Amino acid sequence: MAQQSLHRPIDPELDAPASSPDSRRTPHTRVAIIGAGFSGLGTAIRLAQKGEDDFVVFERADEVGGTWRDNIYPGAGCDVMSLLYSFSFAPYTGWKSTFGKRDEIFGYLLRAAEQFDVRRRIRFGHALERARWDDSRKLWRIQTSQGEWTADVLVLGTGYLSEASLPDLPGIAGFEGQIMHSSRWDPSIDLAGKRVGIVGTGASAIQIIPSIQPLVGSLTIYQRTPAWVAPKPDKTIGAGEVWLRRNAPGYQRFRRNFNKYGREIVVALLSKPELMKKTLQGSALSNLHAVIPEGPLRAALTPDYVAGCKRVLFSNGYYPAIASDNVSVVTTGVTALDGTRVIAGDDDREIDVLVFATGFHTAERPVARLIEDADGRTLAEHWQNGPAAYLGTTVAGFPNLFLMLGPNTALGHSAQTVMIEAQIGYLLSALAVMNKRSVASVEVRRDVQDSFDATVRERFAGTVWQDGGCASWYADASGRNSSIWPSTTTRYSRLTHHFDPSEYRLTTVSARARDLTMESPAR
Image 1 (tube, one colour):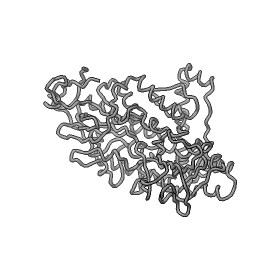
Image 2: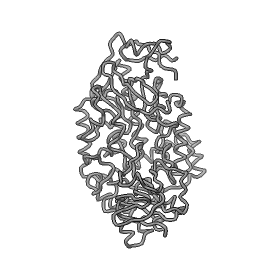
Image 3: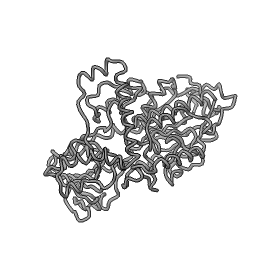
């Protein structure tokens, strides 16, 4: 068993040798990571690269991949360039196209887990049931579906696209057709010649629709709000480009950074609705007009809000699919299901297979109900007036808790991997401070968190996100935009570059515990 120096007060129960035949000691790790998607894997890889050897990843499924493991619907892929939608510390030169498809991205994560030897640290089939901060021991008590652990630091790598959102419709339980959510696609369901309905016109729907349209007998799209859909500049990566990426030192890094900083320009557009109308919105409108002739259908597909208020989507096949003879658009949301009938206002029709492309629980994240402070109050209860976290990463009242892709870290212009990398760097900086100063716990000060949240609120003023004229998943139940980061990734990376201890309440380890050596469970 590996020996690991842990900066934590000695506890007779906790520190009983794991190998003792009479020991009932709960297994302990320095860092516990929940989830093995991009956030969790990235954190694990960087910990390993930095020599932080004592960590465990808890994954509820039987494989890594998170969103890209679960989303197997037809046409699944990314709308951010592959070079950017990957880790700078785990580069991949084998992308086949400008925008990665689902199988490629999932394969990338599988290879990364093997390449950086972190798979052996993952406990598959361990669904988080509860985690509570023990203030007397300065550690997290974690209950999974397979047992109990303790950890000095808890990292939530569950993201915000992990819990599917299904509408609570009258008759849904007794629907006599087949139902599936886009993130729980059932490939055994044969769509050939079927009457298919799809609820939603967001990021998943615009990929599914052109993929299944040629197969189905009829396709009904239930649209409450149309999306702005711009052309997707996708192409196959040529042999010359592949050679350069693999053989020219620095070339891929240059291309990645070029894409990264080039996308920052979009933030300026999102900050000024009038600029957005003249640029990206104009491109999306031209995309629509090039395929859909003037008339009722074009009118139905034309949004009445400023592009960017909801995420701008990218597709070259969406409008051609809608223009097909076997596709119809219903501009009223589904109100009830009855037998095999789907009712949407005055529209009532038979549907064999109903697909819900209705997104995820983003602002009100179910995992927040499982995280408890020292008094047993959940993170969800702390967030009853809206989610908030300092830098979208740490929360007052929850020592040693680090969120990956927490409140106000989602992007409307770039890749989430950039934000994840910044947050991982912040975590590593915090761990370094804890090691150097023999700190048992760090808890962000309430005034620091509140000041940061107020600054974020101020930055929304006058932007497309606030004044764009739409209702989107960016907003929580109180109407606050608790999802989007209203600035550049460059600014966020600068803010998270260094962990500042003065912004935190620190609890130091007693002198007698500083040289504590603890036997960790075999990995």
